[in-house]
Image 1 (cartoon, rainbow, N blue to C red):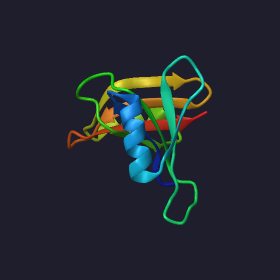
Image 2 (image 1 turned 120 degrees about the vertical axis):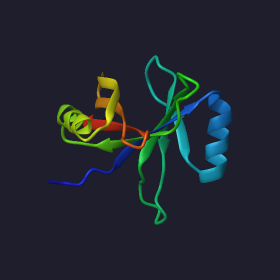
Image 3 (image 1 turned 135 degrees about the horizontal axis):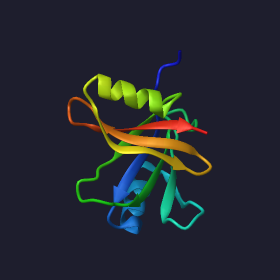
Image 4 (image 1 turned 90 degrees about the horizontal axis):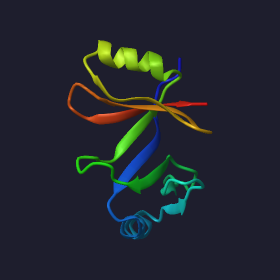
Amino acid sequence: ISMSTIVHFDVPVDDIERARNFYTKLFDWKINRMPGEMEYYGISTEDENGKEGVGGGMGKRGESSQRITNYFGVPSVDKSLKKVEELGGKLIMPKTKIPGYGYLAICIDTENNVFGLWESE
């Protein structure tokens, strides 16, 4: 059994160009528009040794309460959702297919923190 870790982070923004400028200048992230109809930008990071770091994405904020969300890689979103609920967490966005990438779901832990589950295709 492998331990889950952060595999993706999502940054909701009100102004994409303003946020892109901020994070590029602050962290030297590479932020480029992803192909497709949805206006979504991929974020490439590097660790302190210059190796590829955790990737992320940036898109328009859907709700005013939306904040940065970390997604944890899991072998099965379905099994992990069951465990989240057994442990006292809650599901706030059901398992959703992201064509060409995998599946995600968004949850709240017992401390009211929002996090995502990610299952690769």
